[in-house]
Image (cartoon, rainbow, N blue to C red; front, side):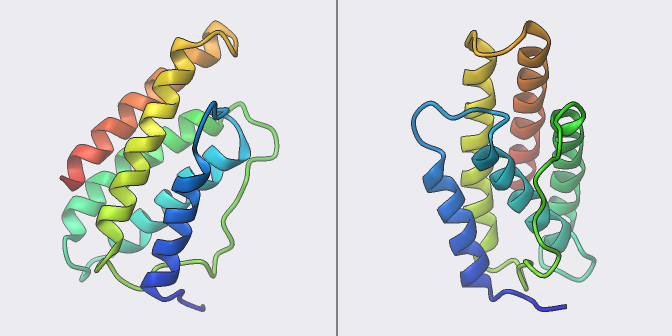
Length: 139
């Protein structure tokens, strides 16, 4: 398996964050990609032996719940290639935390809009709540 250097993975996270501007579709590709990058970061950083693995472990559980709830009804969900992985937690935490907070705001805003069915907006507000809870684990 090829590990992406920390700064490269953090650049991917920062790039995903920069694409989440304006009126972002909570079910759109940019939001899904960002969420999956955060999920990958959590999966790697929560590995036993990594610095702060316990915080990341709780973060990963909350994030996994958010991803599962969000993607349950989406056709052909996006995926992050398995070789795209951070190699450690050194610069990962602040970038990941910023992206999770941005995603939580996107899902909150989407839930408050009329751009989807009431049921989907309920899913988005639940995802926003789970992301907020996940972010609290890293602060």
